[in-house]
Amino acid sequence: MTSKPDQNPAEAEIRARIRRHGKITFAEFMKLALYHPTGGYYAKAPEIGAQGDFFTSPGAHPVFGALLAVLLARMRESLGKPSPFWVVELGAGDGLLAHDILDYLKRLGFAERDFRYVSVDVAMRGDRRSLSDGVVSPRVPFRGLTGCVLSNELLDAFPVHRFHVKGGRPYEVYVRLDGQGRLTETLDMPSSSDLSGVLDSLPPNLLEGFRGEINLAIGPWLNEVSQALARGFVLTIDYGYEAQKHNASLRPSGTLQTYFHHVSAGSPYQRIGRQDITAHVDFAAVMSEGERYGLRPLALLSQADFLRRLGLDALIARMRSEALPAQEREANLAGMRSLAKPGGLGDFKVLIQEKATGVGDAAHLLSQDGPLAQDLTASLPLPLLDPAHTPLLEGGYPHAAWQPDSFWQEDEEASGR
Image (cartoon, rainbow, N blue to C red; front, top):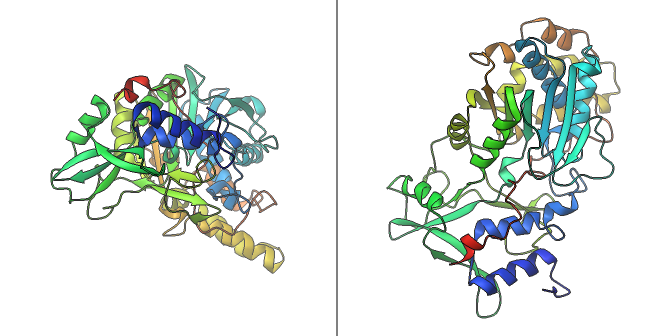
């Protein structure tokens, strides 16, 4: 179907599917709005930073990548120093995190043969700064590796089903067209047995009008991640919550958010393909689904706690006395502090899972004791801001995301309502 001049291809496809089926799930709407091959938000590999719609932790300061490099080095050591130790970053975006991690692994004295870093994303910008190998793929295209699969602000951009409590029971939220051709919502029975099962497990005392999101893509994603690893770790960093299921008293309207030029944009049904759409991650679900596929949780903690355990405070103390012009020193301090800022990036969650590693807990991975931590905080050059980073950070928002291999199949089974 040919789109109107003011409609991009994603919106045209959304409207065409609604006309065919009467309505579509919100998950199908969100999938098309974000990932349509020519009109979706992520199809254009959106800019990250001051010129784009969102900031991320890697852009705040390179110390984020430096501390992740320390963690990866400890992970490798815990597995007997395999060469190579594979690092697969999913949703790698512009490659800035890969660049910072590899740069600091080199500063830590590791050779190229010690680590093999692969950046995977559904789209990659031509000016990627990464020193790593790049793979454009909607899947996790590996099997049987020893190493770590990591992601930063990835799961929050998976399409979600939405539900609304009416008359004491949860209904699924669908998207339809009203009499004037405007996108609007309607409620109906769940679109699949999987969703019915999740809705049936919700607390029975949810308030009338309560809204929430269900991310059914987490299980398939963790299955692929587990298949990619024969032995190793999964590091997932994102914003979300760890309470079981949905807390009606805290989030009665759900967690769905839209962003356009760093501003909360309101309705998801406007600026289709030009604004970001995200939802908070249910880390309880990530942990329980992970265990189904052999991924045992080692630690779930805030990003502030995570980075401090790896030595952030010591690096901030060093920066205070670094021989730099005052303005440059303060800019670096602002960027470093923003990574642990309460109410911002510091409240992000960090989940570490393991598969067949023999590691009992995450204590030694996150301890400030040991030669690597001492070298980092005492003698190695401090990572400094450069033009690829910005300390002007109000919050952290998501970037490109992975989707299961069935992502672009026509959802005729789900749509045949």
